[in-house]
Length: 211
Image (cartoon, rainbow, N blue to C red):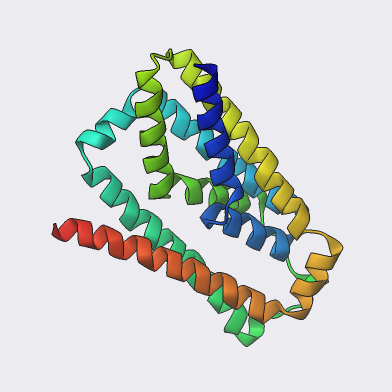
């Protein structure tokens, strides 16, 4: 059993390391606002990961499997939220009054950074589907709720470490100077990627509504 659990946890860590909305959120916040907001966004993501684990430990995975409409709703909400973040980044990139030297930019409030990290992971349908698969697999191993929660705590801790590290990397002096120099290109790229991911998720949700 320990081998199977270790394999699941390794998969979670690899999913957290790979590029996606969580990484995009942390890196954009760290580049634009610095190390502290980036780390706070990472804490929001880690909180969301732990909440997902709690929900699935107490059986929401079976509910989502029985009612796939809930996943469709998440696609619509998650896609809309990512498009919103993309539009904000594009506005920052292309509105002339938005450009300021790095030292004059106002640091993102802690609450906003935390909420952005939290909502990105909580509205990500891929996160829900991943935990559905994990919960179904772990149920076959006859793990207790406490054991499942222990895996959730580990996944949350690894999310904090991984995304906190990303926040540190993207808030270094070199990264911040590059951001100040290529401000519009970087924000425009973030906006385009957020928008593209959000549009795909939203379109997938709309297609599911029509089925």
